[in-house]
Amino acid sequence: MSFLLRFLKSTLLFLKPANARIPPLFTCKAVFVKSEFKNYSYIFLGSLFLSFGVVSLFIPNALVTGGTSGMALLGHYIFQLPVGVLMVAINVPLLFLGTKYFGKHFTVRSIIAIGFTSLCIDFMVEYLHVSALSHDVILAAIFGGIAVGIGLGFILSGHASAGGSTIIAKIVASKTSIKASSVMFFIDMLIILSIALISQNIDLALWSMVSIYISAKSIDMFLTRGPSKKVVHIVSTKIEKLCAEIVLHLGKNGTIVEGDGIYAHENKRMIFLVVENRKIPTLKELIQKVDNEAFMVVMEASELLGRGH
Image 1 (cartoon, rainbow, N blue to C red):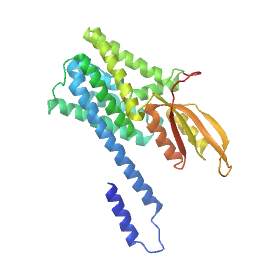
Image 2 (cartoon, rainbow, N blue to C red; image 1 turned 120 degrees about the vertical axis):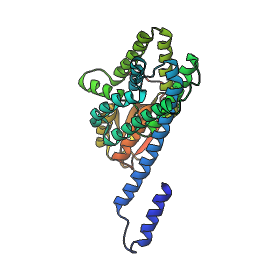
Image 3 (tube, rainbow, N blue to C red; image 1 turned 45 degrees about the vertical axis):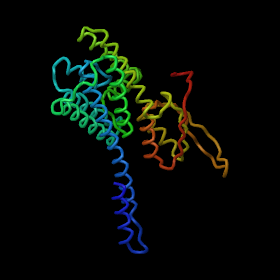
Image 4 (cartoon, one colour; image 1 turned 30 degrees about the vertical axis):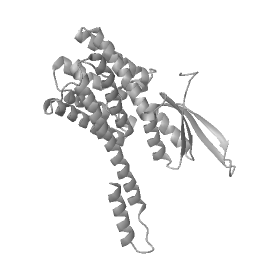
């Protein structure tokens, strides 16, 4: 793809008059195509990891994961319907509802991620007949959690989502005083309780809880290879617009810091905020959209104290 873009650009340079310039629109489209190609590469790779973990480790051992993927697995165990079909049926309507919270491009990428993941899961089950890697529930919970976490990490790196539980959390948080993270935790606990009641096996519920925890930690390590939260400093000339986007899409509060540049002593304004690892890719995308000349520094947060922490 990068070779094709370079070829097209060099061809335009050769054909254009000496005093002409390549239209800025072409350059913008080329950058957009390259960026989207990278995003979808991550999405497809992540879908394969996620699908393989679900088919080869979770389903054979009747384990569940968190979010709407866990709901689809519950539906499969109860009604014997294909997991992929249930994932599409649960997630796609939620993503359409959440367009105003996440934007059109994120929604489209997420629908494609869910569609491809669903297709891979059902194809592996119905046609490839992928066998279980292990029937030991402990190994399945650990390595299934890692595989699902890596898959979700890839998908998040592609600026997409593989589940609509985030949409539910955002909608509830916008209508009530309940935090989105609390809603997502409640959804996961409801799934765990359901698998315990359905299977009449508390061990499966507990190991499912372990797998959800391992998946979350795997996502954190995949995205930033460090603690679960980061301290972010952003220097920009478009602070107000950037703050509005951060509050709208991430639901985060931060602090604006006034300062002076060292070299020219010009006035500088900086945003200081703490962000979860999994939201770092979304934050980067917001910054690039609002001000592609902004300066961003991400640091590890070893300990957090005070309001909200």
